[in-house]
Amino acid sequence: MKAKVYFSRQITPEKVVELYRAVGLELPGKVAVKVHSGEPGNQNFLTPEFWQPMVETVHGTVVECNTAYPGERNTTDAHRRTMIKHGWSKLFDVDILDAEGPDLELPIPNGKRIRKNLVGKDIKNYDSMLVLSHFKGHPMGGFGGALKQLSIGCASSAGKANIHGAGKPEEMWSTEQDLFLESMADAAESVVKLFDGKIVYINVMKNMSVDCDCCAVAEDPCMKDIGILASLDPIAIDQACLDLVYASDDPGRDHLVERIESRNGIHTVEAAAELGFGSREYELIEL
Image (cartoon, rainbow, N blue to C red; front, side):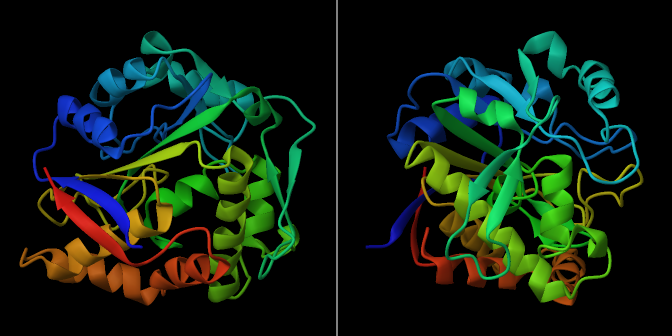
């Protein structure tokens, strides 16, 4: 059966909540809300004010993990300062999942490239997860959406290096591209299995630059905004976003497509589908 992906061309905080309701899963217990906190200097990340009604709807705790590269989010202290600077800590309870070690090791018995994923140990304190993704380009993955939030987003600093290096952290900046993308798919599966059906995914196609929110110096958006998508399937929701980009007649479409294709971004979706924790086949339901 095709996955259901709900879609709205209207981009408002209230519409995010409406699409969450449409998905039909009331997230149970203590809810981890995975966001992208935004690297200081980045002008494109989605603000805490935009996400506020959605986070409050699920009474969630905003969660993040430290980065594996120099910047203002690579240590717990620096990341907490960024969360304050960007307004997250003012509006929400914030948990840096890998603030203190040791990391939690998630097994990936059928992984293509990695057989374990290192995530912040605090993730085990949550019963369910809401994955809030800003869909846009990415300098390494080609694009960033739900699969990237599950993998790189939930990985600890050490876990990020492990994914980038396809199991060899010391090669995190030199590994073959497809091995990195397949490692992202592996890592995403481990988080999906951890929450065992208790995850909702929301992708917002707004401020779509070729660069990620992790870039302190990022290009301005190259395409007009497209809309909001929500689903229980992380593969289907990313595939639907890609299809909407490709179907667009916007003048900036080709620039974003070039970024996606030059990094073979679709391969993350292909690898994830082969692992079987979702489907590239979907029904788009516009609300």
